[in-house]
Image (tube, rainbow, N blue to C red; front, side, top):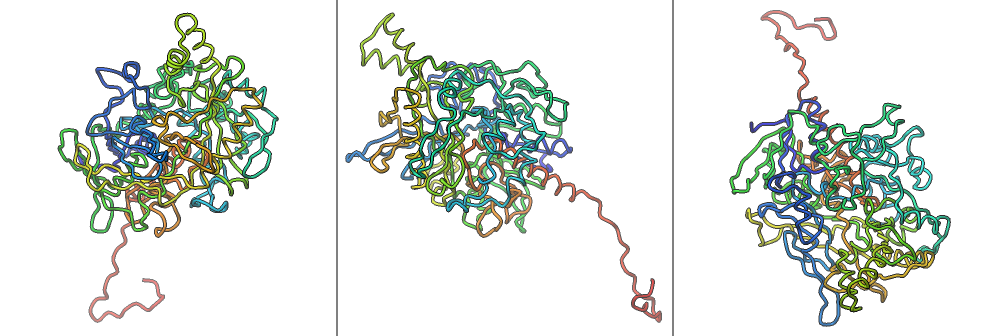
Length: 621
């Protein structure tokens, strides 16, 4: 079959959800996925992960040359002859900006939704209009417009959290009777230690000069825990396993490998949604879409796609939905020469640049037990201070120093080469260091800036002959001021904890995201939260898609996902992306239903017979 109601490009979180929703209505949906299936012989993701030397986000999967993806190992830091920090970017995603876009993604069935952390906090109501704080872009919808879809997304992803805690300590306006599908995950050991020493204490924000009260607050997780019997009016919630089917005993057991792989499949992945697809949804992997087809009126009519052997095929549909990640969506629109009346396709690329600080607690911090972060500090996300510096959320890291310094092999190397320790003495020293490690992860909001963008590389091609994506990226003063404030807050927290600070953005090669600001050196990692490349707005002159994620210039063409978001705020964006997707799915179904509605047949007016007078105006006929 080459004719469908809907073609969805990409089988990640957004693509899988929109296909599921439309399939429930009996729509014929073709999902084209560039990567191979996520569970293919001869090796499953766990085996591949365990046998891969570099434990990076994409390590459970093997990229096919026809569908490459960017990895953390593609970037390396450099130092110029004058000591100026620099970087080198290799691999699929080429770069020419002052600073590196430090995030990757995965092109495999399920997409980056296979390798994410599983954290799903909501955005705050004020996050939908950063223009009022003097930066970024305003959304064409509000938190209230999205609230119903937030609840629906929390059901689809299976979220574990405490609504009362989110109301009181985050300030989210949940309905009074709302509870999450599952109860909050238990606090980790490091959470309990930090809570005992920090809750109620105050630190000064050096930019706004105001004091902020600290409190350790649980983070919502898309991860199976203990269902809340009060959910859905007392009907409760049943967790789902890897195949999307009910699995009451599928709970997080603390494997400590959520990124890149959860062996117990307690964490949500798009494969769970795919397991519930109707028979009218067809998944075709190893299919790299290269062009969206439109008719003479600009209406989307289908797509052109390549198989791995180079064969080119065409599929047709009344609606085309691009859900292939913010970078790949922009690349595909540019390849097609579509939706760019505003000149904003590919522009406004955003991420969460993450400032890491790390050290040793005086006692056992309990690292490598459970999810990478269970709790955080929420007091720097909102308020007037964001006029002066980027707001940030603090994740409390529970995986030791792995994100900052690499695996524990780095600790072994330190004591072997720098301290000359061997045998029992080496084991004691490594054990003492590892058990006391903890990390603070400051996720900075980055505002929409048209200078940060994805374009097509002028001459470099991938193995299918398609131009590689080229990124130009930088951090503005607003973000750098946020990082300066975060580092000052970190210094105060370390002092309150009595912790040894080991933060050090060296060696240069390990920190491509390295820069100087006001005489101090900072380094950042990418959170993998790409957004903004087909930005949403209320005018076709200034945005790519409308509030439903429909491309302004092309009826029947949707670009969905984080690329539509006008701001990335301080929350991990997956839940907001899922809510937007469910909202768009409603619009697509309504449009298809209107297409299918029978027209009313009205008899044409008859002309008077010869020599018969015309009816008098207003008289019955």
